[in-house]
Length: 271
Ligand code: KIV
Image (cartoon, rainbow, N blue to C red; front, side, top):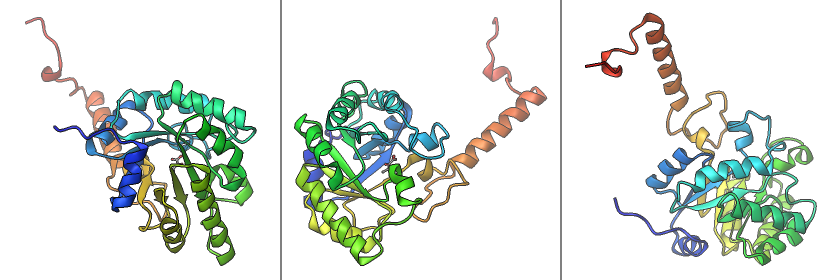
């Protein structure tokens, strides 16, 4: 199988310029990262969504830097050709630019991330500039920013009113100017995501932001249909892995209980 070349910040920029769509997926472990990379995804995000889908937290707020580093290690050990982004969790970058640089550095040095992602626009100016000055690529994230769930008053689509939409366009332009190499646009009308994508020269990666972004990202567990109770409008399930797992567990339980597993084919014998 021919290997792709390593995806870099420059590759992603060229993809935007050529109009090639960028495919991003979350991964939280070695084997999933290997499979995603073999399939050809361009970017892998070790997102703080791991708080919900791996650790069972209610939202992303409790996720720690250590948890992100731990899962990043598994992903980066897959040595993906995809560009690996580590999410800076809540309160690992908001308090000061110094904290932000130190913690972004840990995601790169200890976790093997090639870039970091953080939420927020203009109010993150000093933080973004400090991390970029440390030569760490920064991905912005605006629109519905889950770490601000309490401030936003819930997980609501952002930028529906004209004034809010204009503000988000300003925030996107600011992220580009501050030195971000790309940005996530989450939970906004597709018309607004299109406006932003046309105005900025860095790639926009959408989730719940429609088809006009330069690329798309989904949480891998959602795409695989691991949790049939989570059913957001923006999620498309490409498989029903949760159902398949349940069927496999049921069959295993039945065979162990009735004594048909292990059969001779799955047993060692002295001869
Ligand atoms: O944590 C995450 O998975 C994310 C994506 C949804 C963009 O931030």
